[in-house]
Length: 126
Image (cartoon, rainbow, N blue to C red; front, top):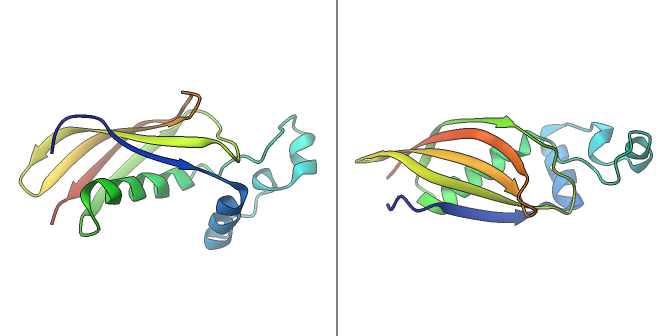
């Protein structure tokens, strides 16, 4: 695999956030309640930060195929992301050996704001 940057893009809409909340049982009002948000001077629901782990895992599977296994994934939040924003998961291979790659990752919004960084992953290849 080349050392060029890998890209995975997705727009996170409110229905996506509700589906994730249902799957994880995380019903914090910050993610859906407009009155609660207004009281905190926020105009849109905030994307649950843990979902970025899921999107990074999806991106890794897109890049390396369905038989690849993510054996390590770490990430740190930088900024809030809001319902309706597009994110870009970006990756660059930092180390490669037969059957295994390590990557440096980050997540940006469509506006170029860093949402998640630093981040890294190790993937076992089939």
